[in-house]
Image (cartoon, rainbow, N blue to C red; front, side):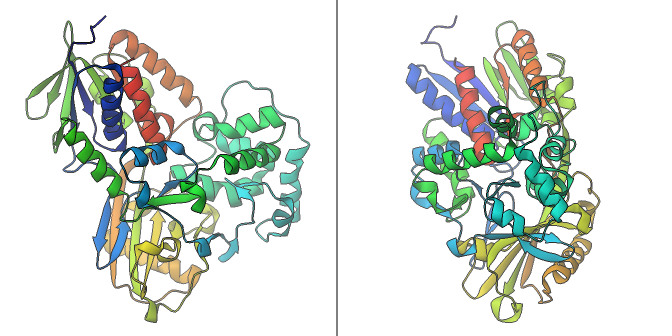
Length: 472
């Protein structure tokens, strides 16, 4: 056992939100334990923050990566408070609470009480034009269908189909839930994506009753900061969080190195060598790897079998942001945007009415739209050249909303191999991998979006867990 007065040299590979959070909470955990540590964060990209990328342009606040986070997930709220950013948090426009689903080229408002695609209020659900009466009745059969005995994982799509039927799964749940992962619900793990669904079935015998109960509990536990809405962001964009983390780490003496690629990890008798592409070697007693699964596999394959990491498939997506003059736009929004089922045959999977959803994002005389492109079954749209991608998106918004105005400018962001797809059995596979690494490569911890949640709060929570594990 290492004594508490020994300086632990810790290298964190990956400077996205998982890596930066790991470094921040390692500092906090070391202070709590009265230990001295030396942390180096190595990031291959020119800047820290991973997919978080806020652009300030002509009075607009444009998110080129993620644009917000779920207010009910406490990890990011806690981090904001610790960084002194609580006053920078802002909620969605209370006048833009409506969200729509496109069906047969018409926008239908989501029924009130819909939680993650599951109806929790029966009357609004019964009135929606999104579903046939047969589809509605099939969904309500969830209230009387027996629960399946708990016997392992299953696909998210299979579970939804089993509980609430094919229509709800395809027309409502898929465009809502698949948007989080850009994946096919029939291939995604229930246990890794929405374990609360399975828990609802086990505990309440019904998905609907379980989500009704969860909704009440979540509302009761919601913090004052989060009461403004389902989603939160920062007034000057999500890069506010990255900048604050970087500054806090620098003040704490963490060495931050961007634009530095890691080539491999080699084991020595009592420590590890982190070999950089430049040929430089960093000695480390402990290592946290937060890169995508395929990159982590390249780094670790000489230390242990890492087939589980190779089994995590990644999907590429893109977003197209367009700014307009309100005078020429010709449309007023009464909500925050819409999602698109695959059956509609469009290039876009969703459209956020950004200037309506986030009042800080645009000057009052301008309009900002953000369209999402690409999912696991459509990787070709993401590969279109810029002109072709813009033309396809403009054609889709003309067909769905009648928008033909010329944009003031357009920003395209391609996030190649950015969305991990959790296959059925993912949780068990990752547990097996970590157990094997603890035996073959003690002192190395792998974490990040490839493991236990792709949202910003999930990555921050995993960073905190990594710190406790590394210094445990």
